[in-house]
Image 1 (tube, one colour):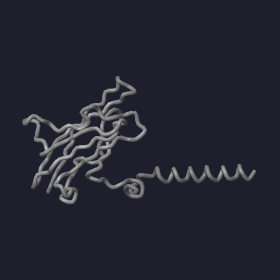
Image 2 (cartoon, one colour):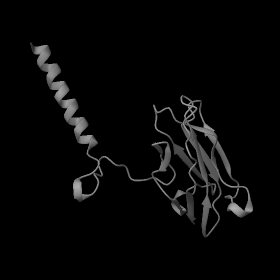
Image 3 (tube, one colour):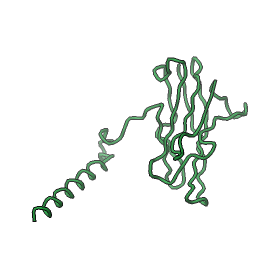
Length: 159
């Protein structure tokens, strides 16, 4: 009997905790800041919603405080852990053709790890205000027929 009571209390606690964390919106009062994390310019998240890409920051805004001691910035995009989605071989790509925009100086982009959930780009942001268009490529290796259209957001640098 005691064991059953303890299991019941644990279940109620878990369910009430889950309900608390699922309340991201507080009706007309806005969002719940205890549940939604503030965007971090160097750590954007990429979501796949109905086979379309969504980034939690658009544009990604870089200021002087994000620049490292070496004068470089590393942006690390992440896909949801446990999801079937991975970054494609290109991962993140800044255009190379002059008519499609300019690349950040000293650019190096690569997909990290065997899970392919993290794509990173390191570059040296120029002084002043700059905008760089980039493309995100994601795939679903478990469902090759699912077409995920690439997304072309921006990085805005104001150093």
